[in-house]
Image 1 (cartoon, helix red, strand yellow):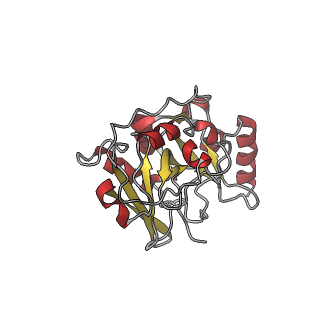
Image 2 (cartoon, one colour):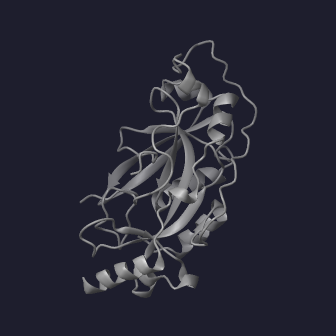
Length: 264
């Protein structure tokens, strides 16, 4: 079975689901005025594209576990500790030559955590959020490695309407996004008028991702939509995803998984 999200050594049998997520809101989330208006959001020559700098994204709700953090510092810390190796609201990255065009709504991940993958499970989900070393995670205890996962709030510009989605990025895609966040020309990720074209290509049994910046003057080459304006961005910022989309497990549940993995 082929692997999505940059599978590294130790995750060779991982399927193309990038980890099951829970919570969040169901259905497409578009700007309020788009929901209440029948006017098309497709490009019009006279549409103004300039806008003020994007407002900072709202803070996520209080976190229920230290195993799920926020921001680049937490992401890099998780990445360093991790092994080298569908929700309707989640944006799927297509295989090249297909691509998706997005606008980031925040300058860093809204959630970051380490994830275990349990190949020994034959039925049901195989991905589980690590409780963390300080909490004596049962899956860490039996020696299962982890990989870092980052989640980002984005606007999907690939369809007939701009839609709020979140990207779940494994190590390869997360590294590509992080690189863009550190480059002088593309930082911060959510600067006004900036969009990114994302796609992936097969590489052995895994996928390698590309994340290319596009300014609003060239948006028409990769999207049929007008650039986002202040009203669009403000509406999306009012309904950002937070870490409630991350499906957590209790210690008891993880212990049961660890027991099953040991038996396997």
